Length: 452
Image 1 (cartoon, rainbow, N blue to C red):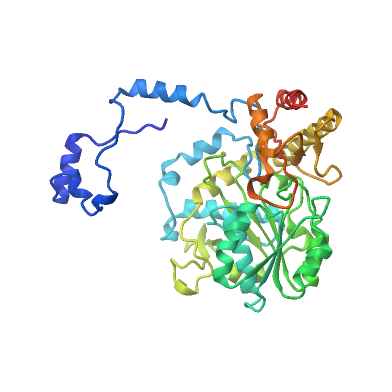
Image 2 (cartoon, one colour):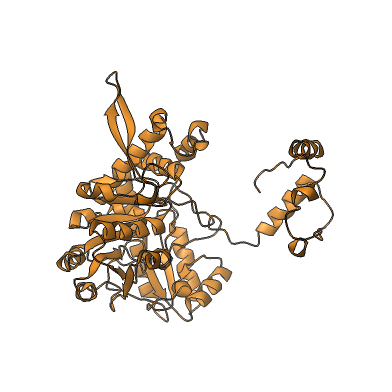
């Protein structure tokens, strides 16, 4: 329970006096009586300690990912979080700052953004990266809008793989209609991968972009060179979405294969799984298209005395001078989460990230091998397709039924793939990370064995 101390009677009297009011009821007088609640039927007041004990007891009914073998993923992943991340985040100069409206006096914040951008370019293989994107979904939407602007609005079609995270596609649907962009969704083939021929046919010389995710929503690694070529042959820009950023420790970013944009979710870099957030979007593109980049771009310079300094080089948001001509309507800053990712990446290092990714891959491969050996009703949906740390598992029942039955066995075994619809089989998306111990794998395999 988060600590909270409410206002006392004296505080209430002072606040009401300052407002020129006589009672709390006067404060809410503008609310119509028909929709007001006179009073709540609450139990008698209790002291702080007894309430904490009652809530703690109530919380034991939940199966926590920290207290049970956990294989949840589907866009949010558990990874190591060195103590230095929270130590830096909790510093008042970072924790209380919001956004650099006077960037010249925000050197610490600007340096963090600059370092974050630099790290993103190295991971994605592209030349320029920005900051201030909420999450992977909004980064994906900004990428589609970006391609539409780059091609000067002459192409009103976006070809999107069905295996882009369904929640990302939902956000795109919200934006695309208002922007006059038609979205065509291409389903995966029988192997869970996108067919370049299907992409080329869907683009048909009319698309502003071909957008896909790798590893995709089903955990399968796409053939990025072939898909980039298919997009470009159709005259479209190629967009790669990444939801599991840890995969970039082993898999080259789309920039290495000719992708024009690489964007996605950086939650894996030091941002703990939460109740829907906060998350951290990232976006990288070629330097020649930097003028269409949404959000902020921080650059390095020198001050009047020749000392290293940082400045807000490009900021095309509507809160700044661009107004209605802004390239983006993002109007807040995820600087604190960018700081978390920057500290995490610097603490782990390039070799450490590669070792962490290799650990995820090895655990996933071991689990798939043991499930295949288990046999019976359990099988992998795409056994011959490459994957990173996540895969779709099919068994005796729907994904929802399997998740519930395995939870009763004490294992958070995965996320039902049918929660968002889709043409894929109904099963469990099972994700393994470096935090899954050998005992966790044993527990899951044993639980699957009991359900056969």
